[in-house]
Image 1: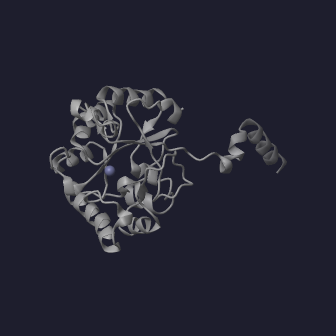
Image 2 (image 1 turned 90 degrees about the horizontal axis):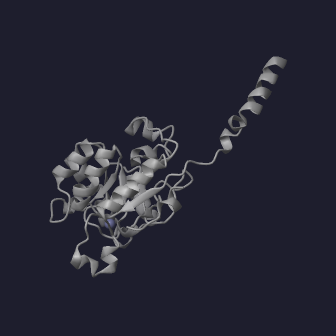
Image 3 (image 1 turned 120 degrees about the vertical axis):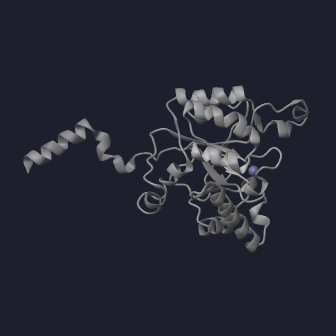
Length: 256
Ligand SMILES: [Zn+2]
């Protein structure tokens, strides 16, 4: 017994963090948001608000390089959902995902075709992952990713999530339309991809507890917003914060 106690004492002195495991700080999961990646163009530059949604391919490349240099690993939302469903849902639903020590999520809103043309090949060549929240109601329309492109991205390890069918502010819709936006977009995307779609991003970051409940009811595991914070497991998994990245965003402030 004495030997055991002194062994424990030795272990505690040698590895004090082992005894503090329960109080270890929660894993920080910065979730970055992009809209357009590429050249905004001369006409677009005349409108500062529209132009602010564009990150040039060069700046995007530099930002992804920064992420890699600082030892961050890009993960999908399936991996993030493991934080919230450690014993139950995730393991059986989406496989055994484990978060790396320094995870980061790179998300793209609206499914613009420039993200397929410019961000996707870059991520692929860097062996990094992206999460594309697309609008199946707009698939294939000018400027938007096609169903074939969604399949190609999904087949290459990118996460395709729902941004609803056609980008309506969910809080302002009646309950039936709100549920339809959430369930129908998931159904359409699952039909296109032939695999489960488990993550939703609320258009305009417009949500409340009814939207969250309906998202959960529709079968999603996470919902993302536009609250500007870094996610941890203490956050509500249906109201996860994200940080919008611009052309000149200093990633040192977000990813120290
Ligand atoms: Zn959007």
